[in-house]
Length: 222
Picture 1: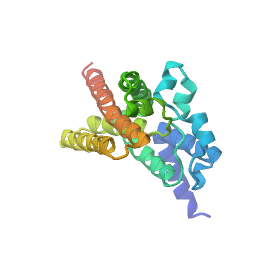
Picture 2: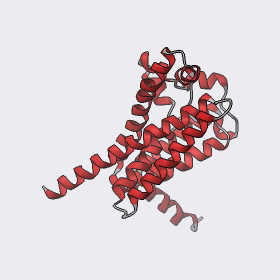
Picture 3: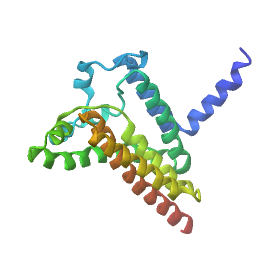
Picture 4: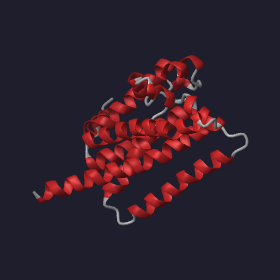
């Protein structure tokens, strides 16, 4: 028992240092337990209908669905992958810019991505494009837009000399994944939606990173 105490103290300190990351991971775990997706099961159609988000939902201003969709995953290995990447990327953003900046970037990237996906898919839907209609109407879940935005913000704020090379490489990889999903036969609307969300969220995160970097410089010069 005594051997466990140092480890428990270390964990408590890390939670204290990264409160937003810990809270977000805790909410994802809670959502996973409530939807049974943390136990290895895939998300049910009922849960997807209840918590999933599609671009068309933004027209109805369904804020609750927009928020809850970021905390629920598709289940199985996706749950653990999402949890690990949230801890890593949101934690990095919180490390370099603080809890408030990480929270603003995570939720700002998530919500901005939802809005911009509507901007992209609605004209395609109205023009009669079948894939555009599927993206416009298909519901999906997951925190990936938020943590991809946090990854971009963390890189920009890190001060690492090679950060812009890393940003370019990641952006190219995300764009390539979107192109591959668009050219797949048949195209999977959920794959297209997910890859489109990542392509949108990454530059949004860069924008947040530039904002917080400039803000920090102004405060240091004051």
